[in-house]
View 1 (tube, helix red, strand yellow):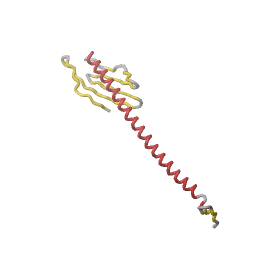
View 2 (cartoon, one colour):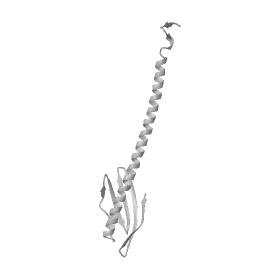
View 3 (cartoon, helix red, strand yellow):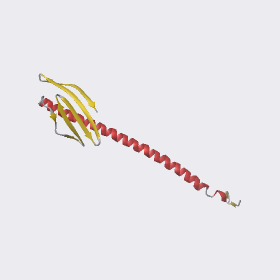
Length: 134
């Protein structure tokens, strides 16, 4: 084995490429760690976006339900579908049948529905249930 003498170091010719292989090894590990962190981050962002769209669709459905309540207050015997109600970037579709209001809110690709049971007896308008349905 040939040795090259420097003022402080002795370099062996057989170990020339070891630093390059070590550097490549640590770079591959670093890229793998950064890639996995980016995948976790993007999954979190997608989940948050889907949750936010669901909440917005629910609020759009509630707006449509309130529109249905106004129709029933003005005309207690009304049954049928209301014109689509634009709410922000979403849209609500409302149908009324025998005092039951079903409002479907859509926002982006997310859809949520609300059902309201109402009664009107003797001029007293009462909401007996307000729930989300599938």
